[in-house]
Amino acid sequence: MFTLGIDIGSTTSKAVIVKDGREIVASSVVIATVGTDGVSDAIENVLGESGLEHGDISVTFATGYGRQTYPDADGQVSELTCHALGVHHVFPDARTVIDIGGQDAKVLALNERGRMANFVMNDKCAAGTGRFLDVMANILKLDISQLEVEAAKALHPAGISNTCTVFAESEVISQLAAGTKIPDLVAGICKSVASRAASLAKRVGVRETVCMSGGVARNAGVRKALEQELNVNIASCDMAQLMGALGASLYAYEKA
Image 1: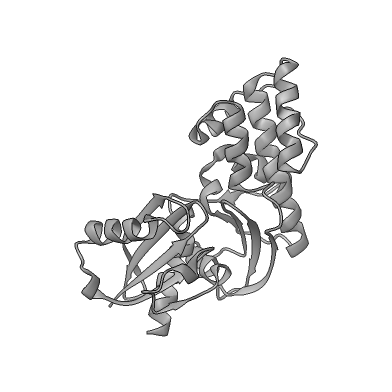
Image 2: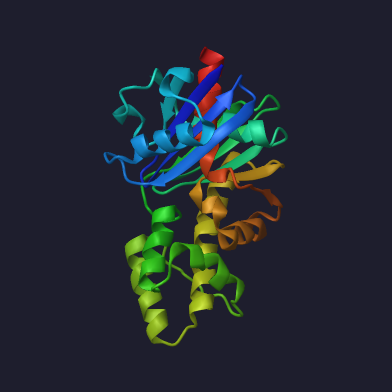
């Protein structure tokens, strides 16, 4: 049986096909905002990679910020549930999940069966999210993919005291004008994101193994800063951005 999970985020659409609730057959990530063709493109890409057709998919579930916008799904499910399922599938020993997406950040506590026991979420402010990193990269004239490279060059990471994206933007511009080097600014920006995520994690209670999911997990600068903030090793993998879609596909199999 093939099931399809679709994670419709604020900045990307992700799709994962799973066979018999165990084997990850194919995956796709498309950069596109809600309301565009991103979902359709992600689905066509994942079907093309797998060699399957629409009729081969038994059940489809949608999750994420825009899950209500995809009418062809057999159902919708919370992204909290999906990230718990997805991370547990890849990291069975995970007990704490830190998910930093485009518009929000959340921390999940998992029990021994990989089910969510508690969570805390920040969805009221763009600070500490992927959007914050996008804004800062734009100010520094960098591609988002360059941030971890620049952060690794830092000798004296800058202090970013403002937690509001708007005020932090002004602060970074001021530090640029004062001659602060770009690598030091980038390291400070990564530390700022990590600090907010660490605060959420401490409210839930940090238990190892700690894992990251979401698009920001790909940024080694943030991962390393978060490890320092929490004094733990953080597990991550190439599937980090796909954990929500993977969880939706696993959930679809459970329902089927």
